[in-house]
Image 1 (cartoon, rainbow, N blue to C red):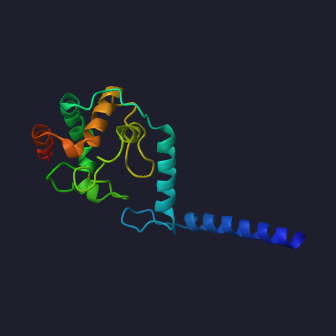
Image 2 (cartoon, rainbow, N blue to C red):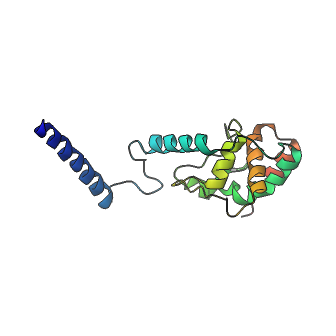
Image 3 (cartoon, one colour):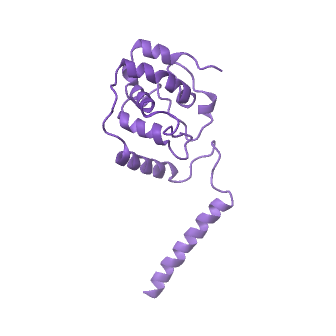
Length: 171
């Protein structure tokens, strides 16, 4: 039994030393154009989803209406569009150089199927190791909700709101 326990201890120490060497010698992929490490995407998504489910607000304190959508447009354009894109606009150079790729929120699936509270959590806290900053200290609570309800209803926006959103970003 002692040799079995010793074998486990030696194996665990060997794995820890191997992992340290992998990172300390620069073998781990760190460039944005490198492939992800084994299990990196799976583990990061698992942790993110568990944390959001535990902490996201379930009640939305503002109405999801045209007024909130229009108020959210300049906030989205100023703080989000450079990474997450605009309707009928190509991906920006910044977005194309990021890893992981930021979702283009007005192309394809977007976040219209996410509860506004989930988007609010992401806007407020950011997402570590993705380039997604947290805006809790730089945008008001109301502003973060306005962006969140705009995105949660991005597949139901009026032509007026879409026109406001779709203008090209200044270069």
